[in-house]
Length: 237
Image 1: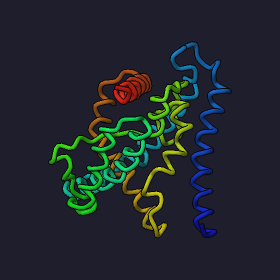
Image 2: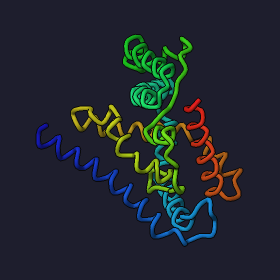
Image 3: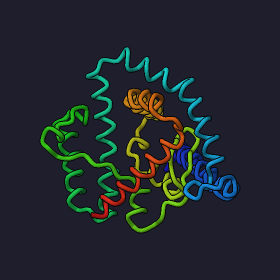
């Protein structure tokens, strides 16, 4: 490993470590901030939720709206497929760690088929071949192994999480195949495009949430925790 690679690894590890440390510090400092037993960090979480919402409205959402407006739909589909195919690799690893051999085999075939016959993942040939798509990360794996979620935590920029999933973030970072893309300039461009594309996919859902939820924070929290538990329960079956 050369000096440049070591520096990049330290920067990435440092970021995820600081995020995890922030969540853990909040867990220690904010436990008495609310009387809600299901959300002991609610005071901190609401402040962070408000911060993230402000960043989203000021920057991420307008950029995503512009991206959706000027980018042809087939290009957006190709971008989503490409990064989804890369994500399937880490999903495959976590399926193995969770002992889900059938799902792991399906995910391996998805990557193989889409990478070869789908022009490097730009086309989702696997879905047409009825190979189901799964999503698994190391936080989910820890849940399958019996590790509790801990308190709900809202992370800066990254959004809803739990203490368990926050601790798993560094592992997920190293498991992201795109992290090893060279040159670094292309990798950073890819990070930006992936972030904007994901935000664009949520534009309609975000508008519905603004219209429907009386307490948007509570709605997002409850939906996230229920969905996360459902993912873990399904992985155990």
